[in-house]
Picture 1: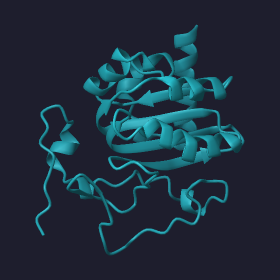
Picture 2 (picture 1 turned 135 degrees about the vertical axis):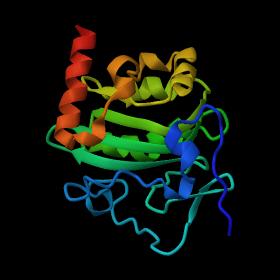
Picture 3 (picture 1 turned 90 degrees about the vertical axis):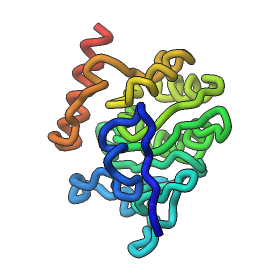
Length: 207
């Protein structure tokens, strides 16, 4: 079966040159953390197909290691969760669509609230492979922002046109984008180093 590739002019180089089914969630931290083996994770005991591409976005097949949460177009992977320091690193792929699928509602109710119940209040969202964003209202973002209390939400390496859509709908009030967050070489870091770097940048911004 021939697998189609994305050719959207605004997509980053990795998405233009790689078929969607080849883009895996980042796996270099698997010696430190696997969400399917974390009893406190919403994805505990999730089983993944080794033989079949059992997920897709529209008619594009997706690597089976991504996790679904109810959206038809957006998938995620919790790359790391540190309950002592109360942070989680989540990678995304696909189309973030609040207008049709209400992705943020599904994500917040079924994933984020469960993580917050376990003490997570600092969220690092990796958006390199988010193709585009379609907004609805910002109520669930506002809820999420209020419920992390003294925590925070940061978007790392989202594409420029995606950030523009978030900003045009005032969602950057709740999720920190921009500056060094837009081009952060996080793969060179271990999870704790990545967290500390984001926290340092955020502290400088707030001061």
